[in-house]
Length: 150
Length: 135
Image 1 (spheres, rainbow over the protein chains, first blue to last red):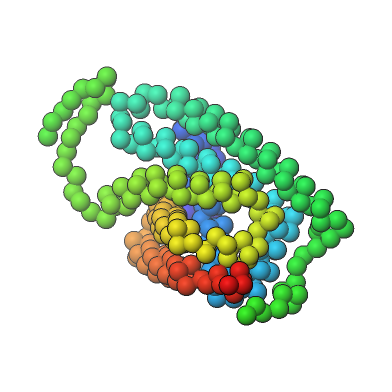
Image 2 (image 1 turned 90 degrees about the vertical axis):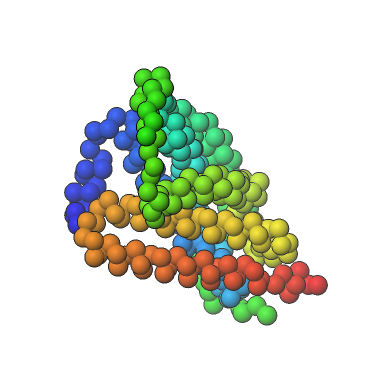
């Protein structure tokens, strides 16, 4: 097993042109999404098993330092989706391999076109929500404030 | 075996042996296509059309009052989790070369994925909106 430092250094070392960066971004976005997805799935299951814990955790996700993570999550999903389409098309169409570089440029471009307006929209609605919270905006919710439901 | 030359690229059609890795490869493409609608749709609906700032258990109760949304979320859960776990396996296999170690890790990953999907799938299926919506 390679050491972590070696893995990171070798992953970052530039050697595969644009496709290399797409590969790195695809991996990191995929791993990040899986990490969030695992937390999200177990957390959401609590809506049925422990509703008051779910009600609390939903408010934990609204705590500004955690809520901010929603924007990079959106970026990760959109990039992974768009780059995934590129990978699938190239897998099944070898005659397009000579356009490898172009294809990575197109997927980065598409990603930016889709993500930038969405990211701005999300940031604006987030800030508006914090403003509506008044002085409590940074309050971290306590589980003891959420009595069991039903 | 047939060989064709399409615009400078040599294409060979060979009979590929059907094995687990081939099915996993195809699954990643097929589930990826499904997730284009399920996962990207979910992100657009929950994070753009609605805002996470407004998410409460009441919002969930209203959505899971319909079997259509329950089915959507269960499909999303199954495809997304298997796609994610298999992707994670691909990453790990790039760095862990001991066959025995990777076998143990893969087994644990598979068990964890199945438990996660069953646990959350059961929660979605049996969630009862009535107490929240007061009917």
